[in-house]
Length: 369
Image (cartoon, rainbow, N blue to C red; front, side, top):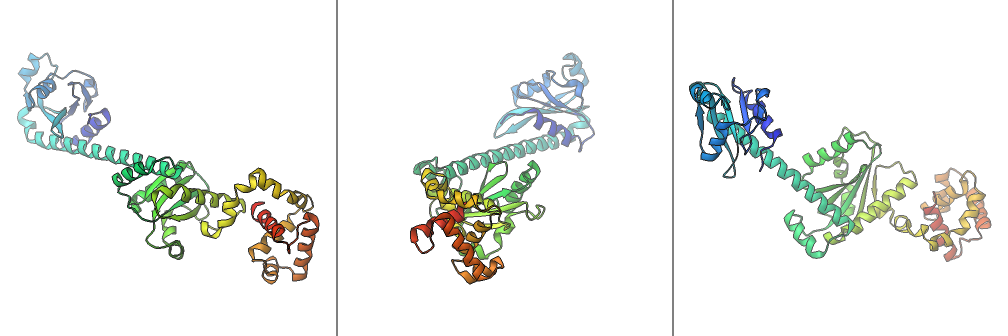
């Protein structure tokens, strides 16, 4: 632990709120790095050097200060100790007889501030290393041995998990910090990581299956009340039984997010299980094989200026090919729906009564926006 200027200034500020005297803090070389008298900054303090050399408090009266050419002023100087080692010196200016009652109090306050700063620094490093571990997990960049070792270190149990991806629609530094602070305060046991300026992931432990998670309201509690509804999406990936599979869980959450944003869904909460097929096919449709299969849809798009036929086709499949249900959703007569489906067959030369053609029609319906 090194005594830096920020910690030293904090010691000076807090102790001078308690006592009426000026306080100085010297580093391990006896140089004043914080002081109630800014004119003394960066000066060599003879008394501090003696404290560090002899490992004991040094009292300086006016006569001794004069003898040292005022390289140190009247007061009491005590070592600041951390984990059994002296890392600096705290000095209280004034007549030793007057400041002696404050000496141990100031020393104790200084050492408590040092311990608190060290603890906060450790927590920051722990969070940083844990976040890096989470990022490596979802990117699939670790061996089974590395996962096992780091999971033990970060106390991640061997159990089922899913990846929850939260996307901020209006991404600002303030909103991101608000979200992270909410996690740290209310869900500190859940490993998190920032994957983008507008995306945060959580390695969420499952006590039950995803259906139970779906029925509960716990997921909405992940968002602070100060974030307005509509300013975020929550996407839940697949369930996995080992930490080594979390990269698959993350990919399913990411693919689901891409899909629901593509269809402009207004829902806040989305589960991969509800969009399994279109989410998994999302990359395929951009491959040369997918483009070849979907070639007939280019003709459909050319003849469908308002996307009326495409929207009809999408609703038809969303209704599990139920003509009555689809026509109700579209607010049209079933005969009108039949007419539109026939027109789609004429334009694409793909027919609903042929299984291969019907699959291609489905693939186009779920992949084209």
